[in-house]
Length: 212
Image (cartoon, rainbow, N blue to C red; front, side, top):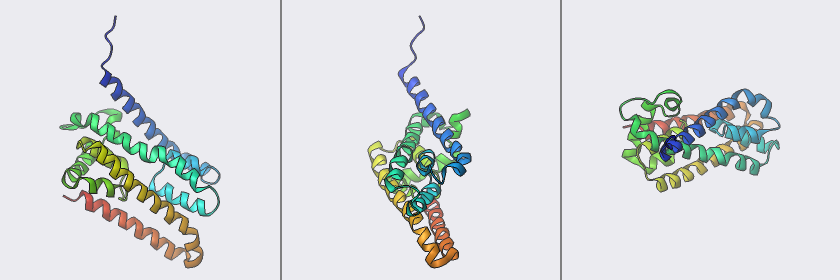
């Protein structure tokens, strides 16, 4: 009779499968976007609730193509759950990343060099990095994974990520909501300048929190 696999081995496999599914959803959203952005905005948000998609979702809400509660309901599972999954992956596989990168798919889910840089910032500045990471021009999953590798307290992580994520969600959807009216009242140049300014701010936040 074959020996039963250790429980932690099964848990690791489940995390890896969920992580792979998240990557597949993100990639699938790219070619599907031209077919989803008009009548199936909620599906697009569910597959890829990134900052640019949330920006478009806000525009779609103002334009009457989707309701705000559909956007919220579709975004929550992956917008928060995806980052918390990254935290779990970083927490469980962090010790194996100490000296070398992980092989195969895990190496793509947990890019060692990028995570180590953010990990140092989290160890130095703690909750501030977790909170502001949601506003930065970098994948939120990277912040989650780095927090897991750093063994950042799970309750503090969930609290600060939820707060930062909620603020970032409101800002992106709100900015997208105001795009149509801004375009009509101020023209494309001023509207584009506003988006560029927001992007520059997000980039600055990212550089600030990862600066040693």
